[in-house]
Image (tube, rainbow, N blue to C red; front, top):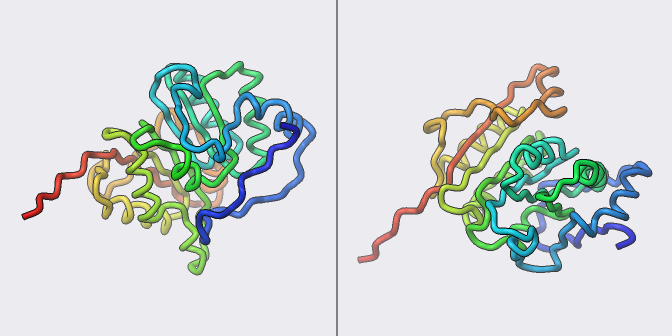
Length: 240
């Protein structure tokens, strides 16, 4: 493909992101032009056979909103036995990560430039994922924008459908009220257990190096809150 175009926005009216149309560097554009065919996936391909995508049968982990891609690339390098999916909507970050994947001869990562909800609904089979990471999603701090936050009951239900039983969800934010919202949504959802104990936040994952967003938050005096939940089998509801 000569240039990457993200899929049309049509599946939901309220979105958790705004696409930034910033200028791409020459290197980012070149990576998009030359490497997307190797690492990129399109939502119009429909439901994916992940074993066929990666050419092997392995556990699949997903990061939603990978930004510059540092965490995803490091995770892929330290876990070559696992296959990784990344979703982001900003071309600059996608272009930068493509270059790193090429430079490191990474074979276990594939990327979407698309809305995470659309990818999960259209492309990912039930129970296909073993881990999902959502690190520092847009906090939409203004009260009138809270409806745009990604971690909402409907989205958690969608994640529960795509994670295997025993699959794990990792969240992090540097906004206190968003952390409280995340905790409330996950704690009230059926089929989830807090691995730190009910109502407790988790320590930072050892493999999660400080991101620039986290560093910025710490410098501003913000706290950082991590959540770690496991997807459990829902108890069977018996009908009379």
